[in-house]
Image 1 (tube, rainbow, N blue to C red):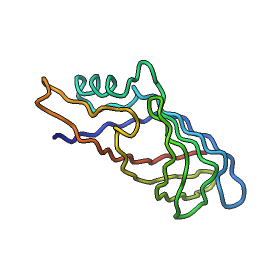
Image 2 (tube, rainbow, N blue to C red):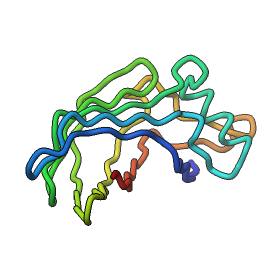
Image 3 (spheres, rainbow, N blue to C red):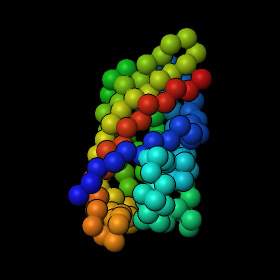
Image 4 (cartoon, helix red, strand yellow):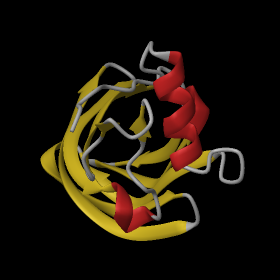
Amino acid sequence: MHDWTMTSTSGTFSGTVAGNAINNIQYNLGAKTLKSGKGAMDSNAYKAMKADKFPNITFTATSVNIGKGTITGKLKVTDVTKTVSFPVTVAKSGSSYTITGTETIKMTDYGVTPPSFMMNTVKTGDEIKITVNLTAN
């Protein structure tokens, strides 16, 4: 098995601040904005994610409190939507909010077959770690 990282610096976030919480959270990420810096690996990953048919990865949640806590919402990858909960920290600085958190999921839970490369000699594991680090104004 082989580990590698794919990162995206784009995505759209919306939510409404009310008191000590952010409500009506919606996050959208284009699957093909995820990049590893290794073109062939990216192409195989997009194929595994069925990115041409399902171009967006989305997360929606009712609310999250400012501070350390847990966010629970719906994560959609391909055509599969699952409820997920993971620890996050929401920090306020002026009119900006930074949300950070990490969670592990299984690709197969979302209809994604872990990609392989080089005629199946290099394979990825089923578990992936999702790291969120976003700032919203």
